[in-house]
Image: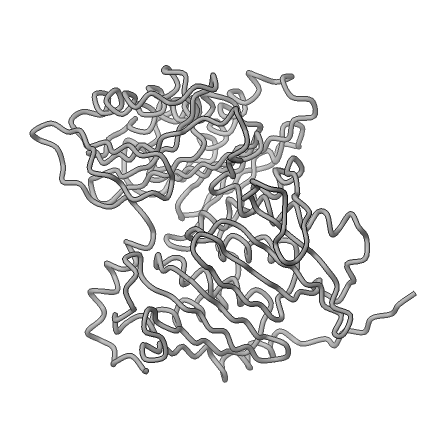
Amino acid sequence: MEIIYQPHVDREIESLIERIHPPRVCIDNDSCSDCSVVKIDSANKYGILLEMVQALTDLDLVISKSYICSDGGWLMDVFHVTDQAGNKLTDKSLVHYIQQALCKTRNSKEISSEIEVRSCSKGPQQKVSVSTGNVAIEVTATDRPGLFSEISAVLVGLGFNVTSATAWTHNDRVACIINLEDASKPGPINDPERLAHVEDQIQNVMRAHEGRVKDERRSVRLRTFAAGRSHTERRLHQMMYDGGDYESCRACYGDRSGEHKKGCDGTHVFVGKYEGRGYWVVNVRSRDRPKLLFDTVCVLTDMQYEVFHAAVSSKSSIADQEYFIKKKGGSILEKESERQKLTLCLIAAIERRVPHVCPMSHTNTKGLTIDIRAQNRTGLLSNVTRVIRENGLSITRAEIGVEGEIAVGSFYVTDSSGQNVNPNIAELVRREIGGSIVTVHNSPYMVPQSRTMHEASSIEVRPRFSLGSMLWSQLERLSHNFGPIRS
């Protein structure tokens, strides 16, 4: 039996070290000709890598390379980044923003308080307490056509406005987060009985198809959080992981050089042991796409792994990631089942945002992404999802938010019967939401093409809603308050 001794570090002492040595950020625009180099050094802490990547991702920055070194009490991380257009970073306020984002995250404790009415279909009833923060409803369940539409219709019938919503599906599982407000008056919802009724109605929607799946795991949670303190995509990863979407993943086992079956371009994971220092080495090869590093680091953090060294790079459309990790607390990854679980969880984290389509399959169909921009009103989400459902389509990914009085959303849809999606669905959606622009294209990450449909009174086309665009608008107003970028 191996005995592992761990030093105890008092939280007050750890906090003092963080205050004495706060994160330092430097943006170097001279070292590389085609990107900016963001250098961050700080006192080391579990989870700090995810905080760094999250801060960069929230600004919609593209990370092409990264080098991580945090073996000891100090870390030094380097990120090669550009904006969405491939340009270097020239905003003077970025250094200050990244520093503040890291310090704020490290000093904060819980970003939300859970008001869980019933944790699962067979869970106990609990007392509901409501704070003065914003309210979000979280749903995880077995996916089926029309589920998102039915939930949206219930919320409208109960007198709620949806201020934003995000839904992911993967391996027949669905996770969605819907932020709510009272349709009759602005401000937080402070009625516990009303919120409990919402939970009951959503549970009824999910129970309507009870029995279709044996031992179905489903969950409805209500959460309150302060404005700007909840990270939706971070939470969706946790919900999908807790729901076990990784259990249906299939690993393609290959060697570390990336050699796999002919015609296979999916996600490949190799987990091996580095005997010299007791690390486990994780090699991941996959298609490159935005937010890939964020998704990978999320699952490593959720599974309680610490990253001591890492190198990430992309070439053409392929991304290679290598991590030297240890289990938090020093436990050893010895069981084969643990290695298999880590492999499957990494594949799930990478593919749940953009599912892998095997080119050798004869059953694959093309989906469509429908981008909408419309005047915000009560029931807008319900109307859009109803049209999609009535035309036999399933929503595999959705995101909608509000910019002022305008609702901006994106829906990736597929045909429930296995046929290619008829692009006329865009025109049907446009008619339903009234004179707004709908753009259709084939991939969740493809740049929108010139094909648009609108009436004379249509609103001008703008990029889709994202947290990064909101942060950039705030940074532009504050940029004159900060000094020049260090380079």
